[in-house]
Length: 616
Ligand SMILES: *[C@@H]1O[C@H](CO)[C@@H](O)[C@H](O)[C@H]1NC(C)=O
Ligand SMILES: *[C@@H]1O[C@H](CO)[C@@H](O)[C@H](O)[C@H]1NC(C)=O
Ligand SMILES: *[C@@H]1O[C@H](CO)[C@@H](O)[C@H](O)[C@H]1NC(C)=O
Ligand SMILES: *[C@@H]1O[C@H](CO)[C@@H](O)[C@H](O)[C@H]1NC(C)=O
Ligand SMILES: *[C@@H]1O[C@H](CO)[C@@H](O)[C@H](O)[C@H]1NC(C)=O
Ligand SMILES: *[C@@H]1O[C@H](CO)[C@@H](O)[C@H](O)[C@H]1NC(C)=O
Ligand SMILES: *[C@@H]1O[C@H](CO)[C@@H](O)[C@H](O)[C@H]1NC(C)=O
Ligand SMILES: *[C@@H]1O[C@H](CO)[C@@H](O)[C@H](O)[C@H]1NC(C)=O
Image: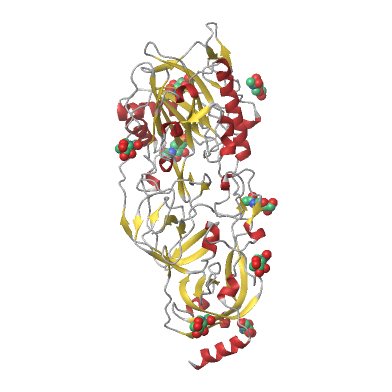
């Protein structure tokens, strides 16, 4: 024991740098790029890329007392054991993958094998108990998400966390909270899963601490907070690959696990807890796919509308029979299905095939087999490879409809791929369409490399009903956006300019119908690839359309059709004109996919929705 005593005396007289000095109260270390000598801490965890040390706390909650000692040298890693008190000389780095747009992770890289010295052994460090010692904030992600729509405000990437390098506000902002614990050993008590695992086997959880947006499944939903400000659920953390080389289990939303102890690490754009070992399952919710409570429409004044993005459906997709069952059995065969992502007859093979009649016929037959519901279908094929999505797949929106319940109204011809539909006044004075179905202004640049909306005019088969208009949408995707815990603030919402322009086009088209008849029945729906909380994007709908969830007063936490990263969220929407909204309606999101046991068992990444509407 002589050596450590000598060392600590020696270091105290030379004003040794402590772990808390290195971490500091801001996002970036005051010692970034510098060599620091004799940093002392107790080893709390070891992994394939180094180990973690922890020193004494200070009273400043902004400052972490844990640190990642980064090295790929097995000689160094093997030279220390958990519980050792060590002295490390090395360089302080702020690391992120080049060009990634992630936050930096603070690490100490030993100069060489002899710059890591074991001073003594057998120490223990009690983990910080999250939910007891500290709890994450539950609403705001970053102080830099300024703008009326919080982290969904447009324009995006107005500032970067690592450039501003603010001191942390751990009680207010999610990334500040997790940054203030970077490198520390923590325990997440009774974790609940909020997403399926990603392709690396990592998954998001919240522990036994206050959460917001809690839905009846146990997931967290993106909502507005009580103050009307967006709630991004920063109270989740990803469980990374276990440090002992064991493998995480497959997980599902709502599953509960035994306590997880591990160290907090920033990597790949998120804050992780790196578990010491793989967690153990405690309980699972029911995996039985739900069935809608909405009953069949009755009479000429009622219709049921389903909406479902069926994820790159080709004639031979293995998910086809399952999705057919969702439509026929779980949604009980709505009168009209708004479907997105029907591929052409050759699926993703980029061979010039555009016609999709085999895909649609195979789907209709499978729905018939599953449920006895017999659908007819109608669509307008795109121009080959011009509508985005999986290369060669030529995805498009299709209406599947029950010809015993509804039929296309009027005598307008079917539109071509490059023909634009318009609202017309028919000889009897009623508003009609120039093409039925037709596409909205397909040459408009707003639809470049994206799906053109499919418009149709219908009437009930039963006598005494009224005509109604539908717009089946699939707006441009968000893929490639930056992470919710990334450097860019607000995070980059990819395609938001294009999506906004598309919403303007749709709103302008709907207005041309309503200008001719303000009481027209109009239903707009599909995969909008956007949240209603991105209010500026959907603002053009404000005065003309009503979201059905809002009309039906669905609890905000139950408004979701998707799960991504930390939370459940709603990308799929149905909007109705005032005439329909004023008559009252029913709506359900049927979580056939988000309630799956594993991610592989899902029929699609989206859940379908169903609404019962009154058209007269
Ligand atoms: C970040 O902030 C800390 C604490 O205020 C400061 O010491 C450090 O130099 C800053 N780093 C950069 C790169 O601005
Ligand atoms: C931590 O605090 C204890 C008690 O005050 C002290 O003996 C020890 O030297 C400190 N450790 C470090 C690494 O500063
Ligand atoms: C955000 O903007 C900065 C500064 O223009 C740029 O360097 C960075 O790449 C942008 N981030 C993303 C994720 O696009
Ligand atoms: C290893 O690094 C230490 C500083 O921690 C330095 O004094 C020593 O010379 C280095 N040893 C070798 C072999 O490079
Ligand atoms: C059907 O109603 C029950 C009871 O209100 C509810 O728990 C269930 O979630 C509903 N099903 C769907 C698909 O919404
Ligand atoms: C579907 O058929 C294509 C050829 O058209 C083939 O490449 C693909 O592997 C098939 N998929 C399945 C699931 O059988
Ligand atoms: C698809 O359309 C082509 C051309 O009209 C026709 O020959 C073929 O039989 C159709 N296939 C199905 C499955 O309906
Ligand atoms: C769209 O452009 C094509 C030529 O690329 C043209 O044939 C078609 O008429 C245009 N459609 C409209 C609605 O202007």
